[in-house]
Image 1 (cartoon, rainbow, N blue to C red):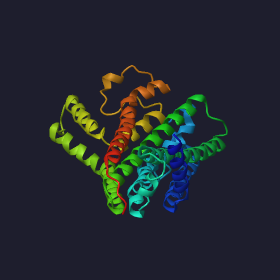
Image 2 (cartoon, one colour; image 1 turned 180 degrees about the vertical axis):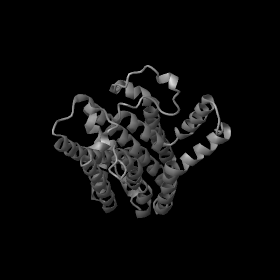
Image 3 (cartoon, rainbow, N blue to C red; image 1 turned 60 degrees about the vertical axis):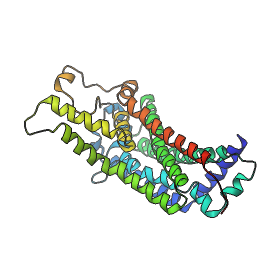
Image 4 (cartoon, helix red, strand yellow; image 1 turned 90 degrees about the vertical axis):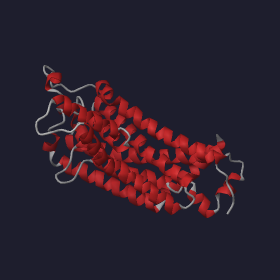
Length: 312
């Protein structure tokens, strides 16, 4: 544990002192605060949020032509994770310091575990700072403090955000292990970000339309099958999983995703769901997001432990 602790604190100092991390953090922080502030000037955009959950609107409501804070986390959050992880090991190799570090009384698993935990702790501290600022802005605008249900939902959303960016951190670490050159690791990481953020939606739509084409006149069963195929493909995308978690947790009015037959919701009262009911809707997505992060790091751990480390 002492070796992990040393690596963790050393990496956290490097992360918070990194100019590229600070620049991206400032961009996300200023953008998120700007969106929340503009949304506070137009509370009419909170119309889709139940009255007792208005504070959640600062996270999920858009401000005019600007998208919501959740969109910026979904879009820019992966870049922070990749920036923290793409040179975690390849950077040590290129500087010729990895053999020096491992020649000290530091086990190899302490190095990889310390780097991952340091990145995860940095992400957690970053989101705590941004969330507290937005919460303060929301309380100042609305004039009242949040209730326990709102705090719980924001806490779940915070945890999902950390896990989501943590997946991209673990993916960046994996590529930094697989590629000896930092540039190759960075390019591959960016390609994966583009694929999971953009191309996966197009692929899901094409495959769903090929298997269950929706014509101008069709039955609800065909539409449901098309949507089920599309959602099944999107389950491999952490961006799609995070978007669904954020939508269900931050908007208690959301009862289901995908195609909904009117007969399924007939007779239901339009009352907000409890946090437990909202979590039941996206529990598979939440478990899948955590599993993606842990599996990606587990692969990184196994590959790194089996690699030969030679001084340059």
